[in-house]
Image (cartoon, rainbow, N blue to C red):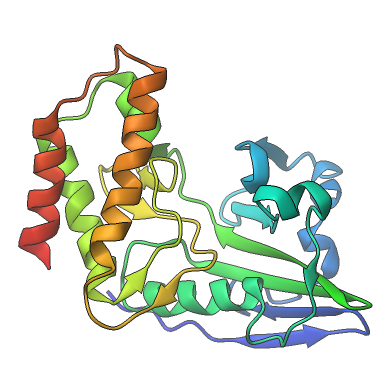
Length: 242
């Protein structure tokens, strides 16, 4: 089912916010500060490493707050600052718009709430708010729990195929960025640096990236319940849904 997502803007001398007025009628810079939510007893840290995020707010406004971080060697030197760029090309604004476009088409990605770009001299920092998928478990968590069936793996492949059908290339498709909700539906999160691309040659690379993530978990947990038949079910689901 398609959903119309409106887009509005707010800015002061340093902060530029792109937001959905249906979800956030009165945007404020404080919405992107974890401390603001901690003071309301509405902030829980989740994840680890560069992609650290927070669950903020309360239903029906239960959201995920994520700040943009650098990876690799640059991330060791400059944690969260990026060279100044245009608003449209900034990472938070691009992810907001990509997410909004996909969500509006009824595809399984979190609905974006707001994106903030903060400018300081020649560099920018950014943050993003998206709707939380309640009580969701990652593919990695489900693998460790040992309760995945070939039908589940097939559904994962079908979900990825839906996004590939929209010509979406995911920059970091891994076992942490695929979430299963309590109804058994799969969702794809973390669309930072995702792009719309023509053709289909790049799709195999997305699947190979996911396979490396699966193999890494297997190397770390030798007793994880997984077989090559499970991966074959995923590929079958992806192929039949394209």
